[in-house]
Image 1: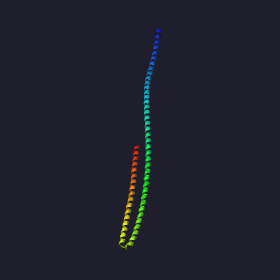
Image 2: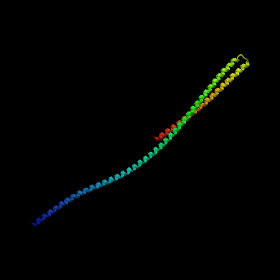
Image 3: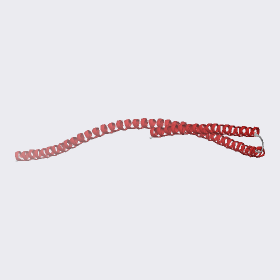
Image 4: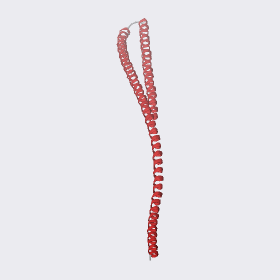
Length: 206
């Protein structure tokens, strides 16, 4: 009887131990699974940290590149501003030169007008002189051959005076026309030069 009780007790204890073993084994498996999961999670976290570090380095490099590009653009903008200021100053100089040349042309035009007026006065005087000579000639028609010779001399003097006046007017007109042509050519040359410089500056700015 005692033997059976002892056997039952040992069997119960064994069952309890086996149950505890199975429970511990199950817990061990569960903990092992959690450990593996934790290892995977740790690996993922380490990889994410490395990615973040790499991203941070890339971001730092990108920021440096951006700052370098911004500095370069600022320098380029400053250079373009200086070039534009210099170009505006040049155009101001061109404008002053054009105004000076225009004033010179106006003076020459006024001078030519005065010369034409003076020439007209000479022509009027010549016409008056011719009329006077004609009157003298009419009054001398009744005179001798000496008077006729005097008339020829007067006519020759009239022709010489008229020819000299024509030569003088031609010289003055040629001088004024040549001066105006030179001033116009100079204005055109300077205008083309500064237009070319402006086109070059605009092309460089683009």
